[in-house]
Length: 484
Image (cartoon, rainbow, N blue to C red; front, side, top):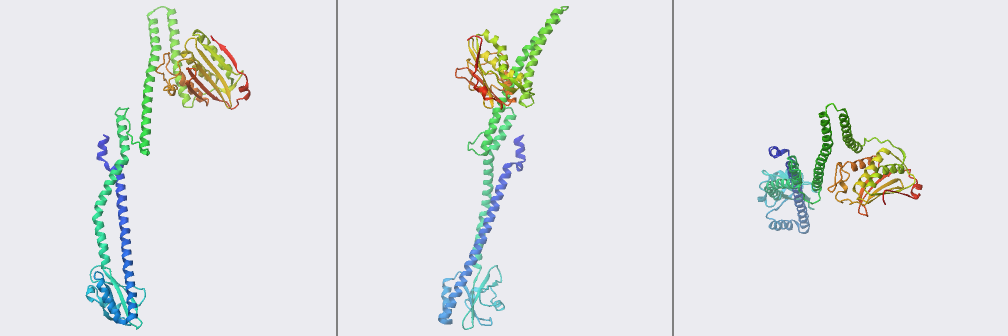
């Protein structure tokens, strides 16, 4: 459909417009240059002819002064032998302007020389023009005065100049058509060459619309704007493809994790229906259904919290609280689970640190980080949790000595519903997404990397302009829990 529309409406394509504009610019430029060249040539030839007339006029006057009329006439005859192709017009007139002698009248038969008697003959730099009976040529004449009262005129025909200009025009007309065709061909070539990346982009979009999500724009790697556009489009397409794949995987994970509680929910209700007249069974079934529904609602609530945090609509109940006490409360909840696996939780905390935050949300952050640490720390392992006061911010570190992090997956840990390839623990990948969303809602940042001990290290930075230096200088308290 796309190619058919392009073929039937080629005049609407950018390639056609670029080629047309290029051809028009080329044609107008050629015409302008040709016109300028023609005018320049005409002006140059005109100046040359007039300069020759002036030189000849001065030479004949000098000869007349040196040897009289005899030498004057001899000079005219001698000059004629050297200018057969473009002779000078020479005429002697009396003080009344009447013709006394015209040299070589056979050269000037196309002109009505008697008309010269009607034209002014004042000596000086005033030119006289006499048009031919037919044609475009004319005589251009200049007059000089002699000491004996006589005057003489020297002129030149424009026929030679016109012949050169006509040959120039004929040559230009001969080469204009090929040059215009060459300009059109060049315009088409340039348009196709320049817009080739756009055509590749269009074909790639059409392929993606047809379902070929792996299609990419071929690049020229010449680092121009269109090549950069192709690079950005390929990166965007790859990101969209990864996003779609991630959404599909996330939906699969959500469907899988929801299917289990929903199946238990249905099975428990169905079992209770078959136990007629047993109120105790009904009660136990309703309790189980409530537990499963609470689990589902909790999952959906987390998804809603993440969505609100990412869109900036998450409501925070900020107040000044002691972060150290908040950490202690969360650690106490996981102390028993850690002790069952023989994991020691080591704390590095200042005596007190007040911070403006939402205690319930930050408790969720700490709980998720500590829950991950407990899950992926091997039995008899170690978890280090530190709260460090720094100028203008507070740093929270949770480090374990588990299997560490895959460098290729670190950037994806915070993606919604992402689960690593080596993940073996139960979950749907919402915990770290919620952590990042809450921390960013507080204006902070969270990061993850492999620790020097080989495990994973998670860091949370929370802004606190009111951080007191005393909190930094206070000796840390090492509170140990579990087995060491």
